[in-house]
Length: 152
Image (cartoon, rainbow, N blue to C red):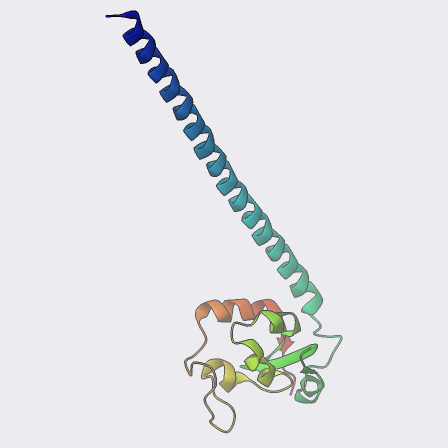
């Protein structure tokens, strides 16, 4: 082989090694970014769980407030929204802004919203939202806002 062919071959191999290294670094950097995103998401979930625990403690007003229908009626606005579902009182004020159905949730403020939640219909039979019951996930999420049982 001539010296030119050897030099060309070594140059080509060197270029391929450099390109391979650059591709490897870019791929590794993107993988690190993805795992950082997962870590941030995990931190956010943990923070949400901590916040939810705090809400449960602060929302447990039973004993300090008489949870009657009349008391619930006082909490009938976007900034102070209590509702009754299946005989339990919930303070859903903090959830109003993130409700997937938007402002539909405001219909529940200050009233017994059992039919709104379970059947998605008003007390006079009007269908709201999708007309289907809320999911188990929604039921589970609702439990985070429980204040206590409705007093008679």
